[in-house]
Amino acid sequence: MSFPMGPEINATMFEFEPGYTIEDNDEDCREQFGVTPRTHWTVTEYGGLNIKLVLEKFANNIIFSNGLRDPFSYGGVLENISDSVVSLTTAKGSHCLDLGHSTSKDPSWLTQQRKAEFKIIKGWIADYNKRMLELKLTTASSASAVQISLSSLARLSVMALICFILARLIV
Image (cartoon, rainbow, N blue to C red; front, side, top):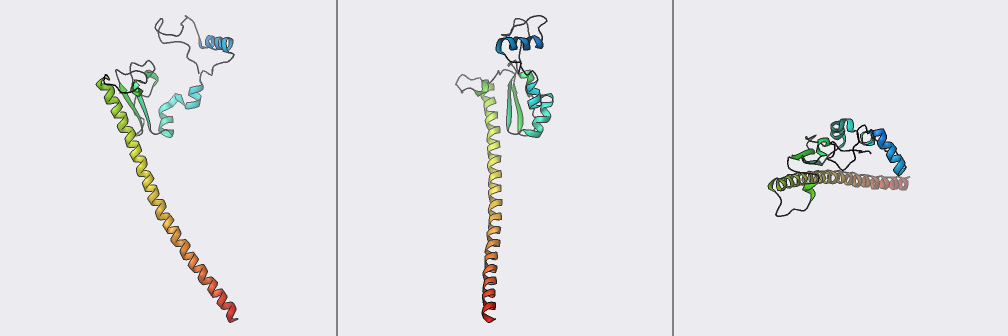
């Protein structure tokens, strides 16, 4: 992965030189660290050219929490993808701010963001528990049917064995 510079001159911790290219970055990495960055690896690995399609097909139970003060938010998921892949966006937030410990000094927008996240996660857990209960009930009724079938089969087998023994005794 490669992140050679920031978006603005003199407003980033990454060096900026006019004319600096990704090839220059690759060469610097080879010289300093002995490796060549795989510049497009994340796109290749995670399907970033159409992240919405990838998330629709393969993801669930993800909250993309975006604080628009975060310089990386422009590359984030800023809209809901499905019922379980959701975006919560706040104008005042920054990178991972909602993941920190709650304090009495937290602004109300941050408290609301955390409450919204908690409500979504609580819903996912309730849905999971409901599906597991349904599965358990289905499995239990299937198991009962199998037990009934096995006990019926056992009775038939015993009856067949008795018939076989009687037939041998009579002959």
